[in-house]
Amino acid sequence: MRITIAKSEAEFFQLGARRILDQMFQKRNAVVGLATGRTTTGIHAAACDIYRQNPFDVSGLTVFAMDEVTNISREFSGSCYDMILRQIVRPLGIPLENFIMPPTRSDDFAAEARLFEQRIAERGGVDLQFLGIGENGHLGFNQPGTPFESTCWHSRMDSELEARLRRESQSPDHVFLGGLTLGIKNIMHSRKIVLAANGSRKAGIVAAALTNPVTPDVPASVLQLHPDCEFILDSAAAECLPGGAFPTELFRPSKS
Ligand code: GLP
Image (cartoon, rainbow, N blue to C red):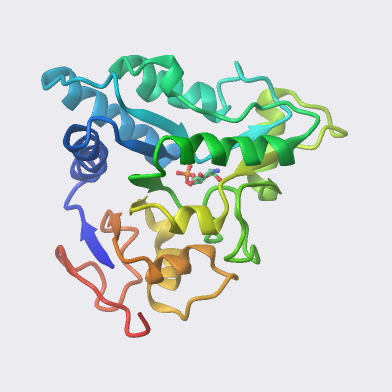
């Protein structure tokens, strides 16, 4: 496990952006899993700025978002499809056929989940999975308690996010808002993982994920077991780590 702590907000976004672009640059047919949310929006914007100044061939890349909100319109600005389309796919000019996403609406989400996994596997599996983290430790829509053996599935979302999305998408109460998400097992099969977290609201869960025993109660704690995983933090998100906010350094949890 590697922890990189940014000295400023700008550096935090730059570091995340560089991890994504480095992977894309080094392997022109890389398969890159992205995450949506407030954290990655700034990272994606920084990636677009860097790319504009240093363009390269992106025609062979595959990108996807690791999860998708279900039972909303794909065109709704809060869908993962729309966010990744606007934030990365269009600005970089990645061919639309190389942007693979599950649908937001389906009468068989279990079949869509298998198809999503199959499309990723057909392209050689995930080279880099970029992750955010929920304040309860969730990864994608894998809430606390999700088994580590889980593969792509249709999950609940946390109640705070559900309430916000319901309001913003004007979805009535009887419509189930869920999340189709890669499972923990899929995430762990990625060749490389980078998780980004900023702000003090993430400090407690970041420390729990990195220093507590590995447990499904904190889904992100499973990342301690991944052989090539990096946490990129700002100093606020790092403030509960042992020793507080320390400079960039290698960190190895005692249990790994
Ligand atoms: C949602 C997404 C996750 C994301 C998380 C963090 O739950 N499904 O993929 O990592 O939010 O979001 P934020 O960066 O806005 O805190």
